[in-house]
Image 1 (cartoon, helix red, strand yellow):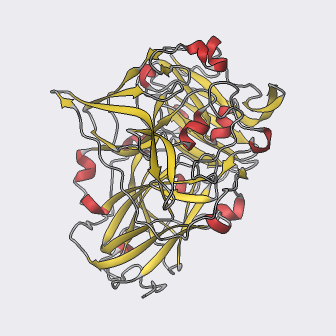
Image 2 (tube, helix red, strand yellow):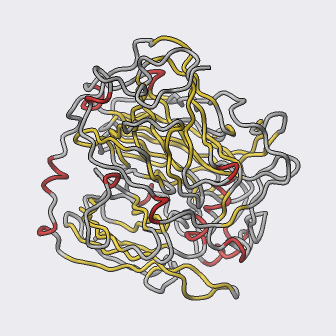
Length: 522
């Protein structure tokens, strides 16, 4: 076996060393760590790097017309081999975890019919999608199992929105730039256990601008859904829900209110997998789909030159590539990066590690060079996307400034809850009322650490603790991670359809235990 040399990872000429300037890197391990408590698995964990990385299949439309592609997805329970030799019951889109990948073209409408064959209500949120309010996945717009009624499901009996029976058509105009999105369950107070059981998948948006760049494509364009999970002695997912049926009391037991962490790292549903690559460039669409685990991704051995070339963020391509030594990535964030294996001899191996992990969670996956390049490696130009709208957005254009404190206060069922501005989530209350077509500055304060996600809009990070944004804040964002005691200012253009949407902490246990608020776009 040949290991990667510290200088050999990036070629001096023709490789990504010429793709863009080194603008800096940052390390979460220096400023904050992981929030949550580990659920220990009840079985012996497998050796890492024994299974191949699976690639979620791309879903094909059931029909097309002049303007629209139509898809159908069934949400159902199935058994899948997650740990070698054991069957894990999953709640999956099409019975799979991750669910099938949907690929939409910008400007062409997508309609997805979700049929619920699970024993509980579900809600589907297209994370990063520019959607009308009735297709955004508002937490109480339930899709009920056939033959059931909302009052059968605990606290939802008195708090339901637009209820659908058996199925719901989610309509996505796709009037947005190419970007890596994902879809997941978003049912009020039960998002954490539903996603933990498998209700998550990729939704990619493509456009002509992106395709003209000659970026790595085909088999060299790979989505990576990274998350942590724990398992019981039979191989089922282990999660500390107050009500394991997910039909009664919401949330987790009190010991896990900070967040639920697993001791097994899954990538595309496989534990510590191996990806065989050719000696060429690869584009990786990295998503942290964990409930509570922050990560700082790095390569081992560590090259002298920064190996991660970021080409995109939550909201799509950057204006120019940015190089990082490591990638700090919180729950729900996406980083679109290129790695260059050009010139690496067959048999070379190196490992994607998590600098914030401990023990079994220190390693994520392994790359193994299997042979010469296959012609799909593409290039990374010095200029990527037109960011004139991003550059033109300035604080002077904002019409309001709002402040939101993410903290722990209030009480429900005898337990202390997570709150925004001291308030627990209430669908009947509007916490912000921005006007469509205007922009606002929001000041976000965090105690302890919280990744904050806004539905339907993207934003520009202005500052952190009155200092410059981090290099990894570049481009359009829909999720910003705040470490304990941090203050950030973001500038938001409310270029969305009027309606009721939410913003919340994307630590899913914090979200389920009331850290969510409404924004009513007028």
